[in-house]
Length: 154
Image (cartoon, rainbow, N blue to C red; front, side, top):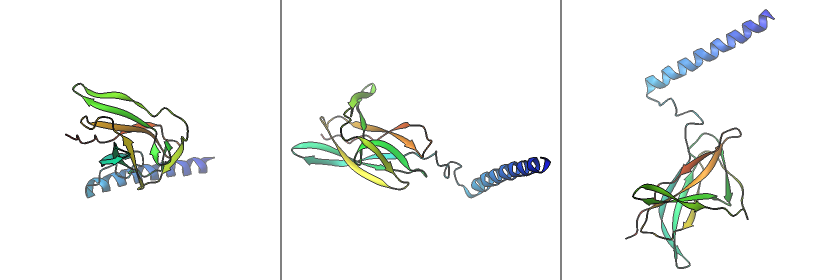
């Protein structure tokens, strides 16, 4: 019993000293403490450009997993189930979400991977953004990530 407690105490002391040494080394080398934290980095959804398809305007976005963990999300193939917002004078206004469940399934994006998708734009003169819910790793809590806003077409 005493041997087990000594081993446990030795492990805890070694672990704490290792964490402290790592933090000191990161500070000396100028590395942000969150750089290697698997939960610190979020995915990015970036507006890329516009394209015309079937006589309608679509915004093209790129989703990239910048975290150190696989991400899961609900989606239609590579396109996530999205929420939509439009820019107003008062801020961002909710415009709805992809409520249809037909074809919806759990998708995975590994660290460093990215996918491109496009969405219909009803008014290219108004900035819009899209958001999607993600869950990091097997135990991560779900969170929403918003895209960069679209450019305005005059």
